[in-house]
Length: 134
Image (cartoon, rainbow, N blue to C red; front, side, top):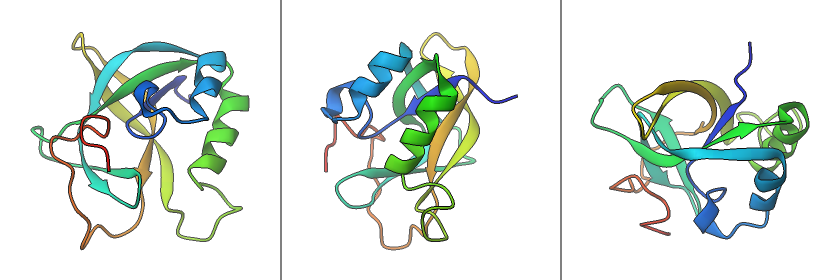
C-alpha cells in the first residue's frame, strides 16, 4: 500500500514561497510539522535530505495528507526530476520513509531523498531549510 502522506522539507514548505505550494493547498491537507531521521545538505539553491542511522539527525519539515495522490505525485515527481523522463541516476528518488509528527506519532510518508553523492556538499545544521535559507 502506498502512503497517502507526503513529507516536505525544502522549497515545498509553506514558508518557502514556492509557486508549486498552492498545488498542495488545493490537493492536500496540512497535518503538521514533523521530522525525518536524516541529514540535510545544500545542493544548489535548494536542499537535499538523505537518511541517517543516527537518531540525533533530524530534518525538519511538514506533513501533508494527499487527497488525490495519483494526480499530485506525478506533478511533484516532475518538479523533483524523479522518474524515467529524467537522466539516471535521478537527483531525487521518492521513498516510503518513517517520519515523526510533532505529537510523537510515527507515520509512513513519501519523502524525496537526495540520490547523488554528498562529498563536498555543505551540511545544513540545524536541518531546517526555512530557518537557514541558502
